[in-house]
Length: 92
Image (cartoon, rainbow, N blue to C red; front, side, top):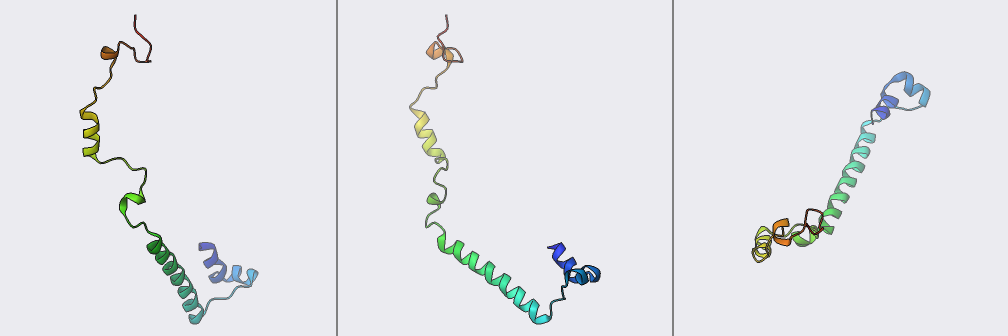
């Protein structure tokens, strides 16, 4: 973007490239096109937004109370309870 401004407002570069400074009406057109683009993108994001928060992140972690209910009935496996070492092999 800086190079575009230099190509227009730096006189020697503007002479080489053949560019002219935008008029007030040109700036209105430029700003309108930019704002129109932003508006369309934001409306599209609003329109396409999921209806529920859970569908927005389908691979999210379960709620903490679900984790507690799952682990409450399960015994954690360790090398002392299974007789296996860290790599899964039986210890002798």
